[in-house]
Image 1 (cartoon, rainbow, N blue to C red):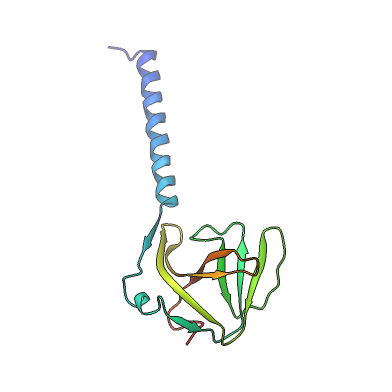
Image 2: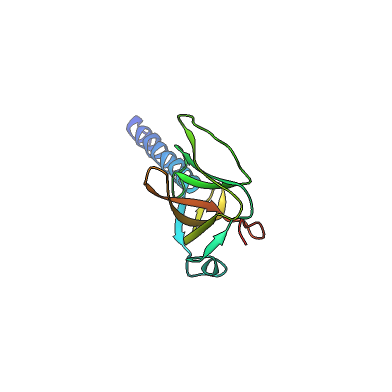
Length: 144
């Protein structure tokens, strides 16, 4: 019994379809990400809803491409004054200024791994209330 060209064509189409599914699955695995609220877990719960005095000069910065939890982030040891199209320094903090974090969140992606953020809220000079993120690193907190 000879193999017909129709059978070969279906075999090639099937293999091609399975190949596309395989690469789509790998691509989805690489791009996988998840966000989780960890506000009730230690040590984060001990930082939340309490005023903290900053130890160093810091800047609240807006970044157009920030994709974690907010376009605003707290940059410690930073006294920058960006005013570009993609990055703007919107508020300066001095040592002794008070900030309060109200939530903690984790971000996981297969590409980067897991990272942790404290989420705060502040009012800009314009009166706009913004939510900002601070990348949490143990033993390197910017406050008391």
